[in-house]
Length: 82
View (cartoon, rainbow, N blue to C red):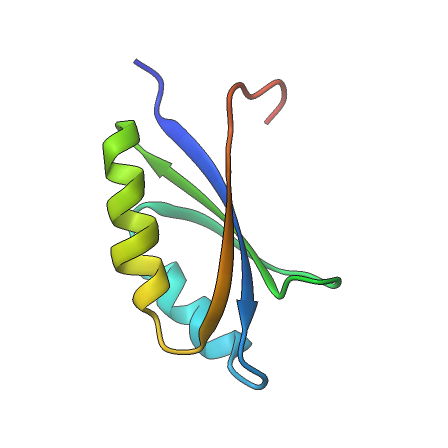
């Protein structure tokens, strides 16, 4: 079974991007953390073994980090190129 992959778009409180990025980087399920320009501050790639675990990572781990204002999660159906 392939792992479940999600892309999480995150808005951060002003001045806390580096702090939040460091906390996200400590999580085993977080495989990439990118600081970006545009309407979001960070783009995070999350990989878990099963769909149910995704809810725990997003709602309990990621959204509990101090400095995160809002998230939008995109569930990946298929990866065409890595």
